[in-house]
Amino acid sequence: MRKAVGLMGLVLFLSVPLCAGDIPDFELFGGYSYLRSDFGSTDRAYNGWNLSLTQNVNKWFGGVLDVSGHYAAINGIRSNVHSFMYGPVFSHRMKGSFTPFAHGMVGAVRGSQTYLGLSQPKFAFGAAVGGGVDVHIRKHAAIRVVQVDYIFTPFLGVRQDNVRVSTGLVFYFGQK
Image (cartoon, rainbow, N blue to C red; front, top):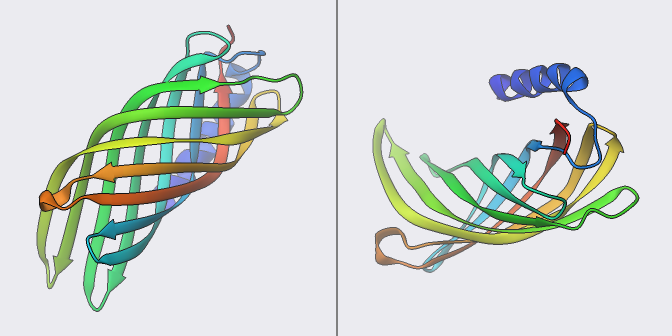
């Protein structure tokens, strides 16, 4: 957790001279994330982080690389889920302070359970669709008020329908 806070501080420090513009070349998001995982008949709540880097091609279209990590511990069994996904993002840049967006991504999801030092990691295909709203607080920064994603994974042949909700800070780099 200390590393994530230090990284966000470094990004904030470096973002001031590199930013500004109506349409940024890149958007860096980092923040808190909550994952509600459905594994067959078992639901599990995870807390964690979400990072994404968006490269804008034009005013409304870009590509997003999304990475997240979520963690839980129940009855001595520690579980974690990490996702690594990429896909298109569509933004509606309005005059004013709001930017709603929608995205669809595919990639890999890694899940692991650990008990008494023994771990069972598994990788699976993952797909996500969702969106959110950014509220601009400065020319080079915004607050991601909410990002909600539906994430599908088929771990061990069992379909999982997961919901991820994230919030945090967005920093803008470059200018189109």
